[in-house]
Length: 225
Image (cartoon, rainbow, N blue to C red; front, side, top):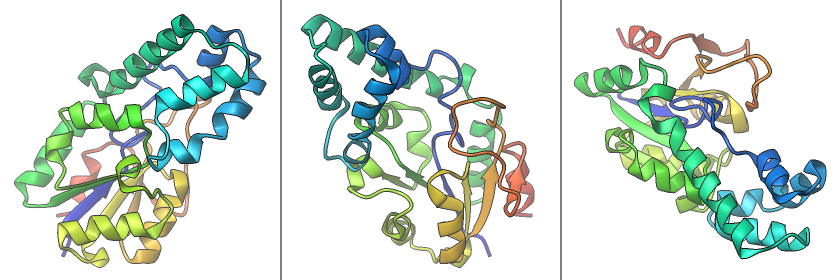
């Protein structure tokens, strides 16, 4: 019997490729820094930003200073653009129209909803502020937990808070960070969410044929019946 569904956030419930994004190449352009050089600096902070050891603001300041491009005006401009870009995916116009109906139908059926998301400080903030957040019974954000996928511990923490065992859960994610493999190893039934997949988009992975794929969010409900 399925008692809970655990979700990934990015490229599953929301997509960062909805337009108006502001990735490292955009920061590099605004700073007048060669893209590959900036990416090399920025990528060094990714793990620390993911597990709460460094904020986005701290990472931007370090990157600009290391590149010899720091000014308070440029720093503030990049911070504002980055924060605004992270809010956009959570607006309903950018979200798949079946996301809220799917989550609401799960709650109506008494299914618990977990969230396991690798995220940075600015993403954790908008997740908390979003309309999605109150729908989660066990939100596990890497920035707050100090661990990230594919570490099994973040899955175990989510299960413990929900009070369910792995074999009582579905896991739904786009497939990045080996999340589908880990959830399967733990005993969950994994599904790959492919409704946001777009050819040529900046996404963690393509279709993973070994996992059952969901073309639309509401398809998940059929597997509960």
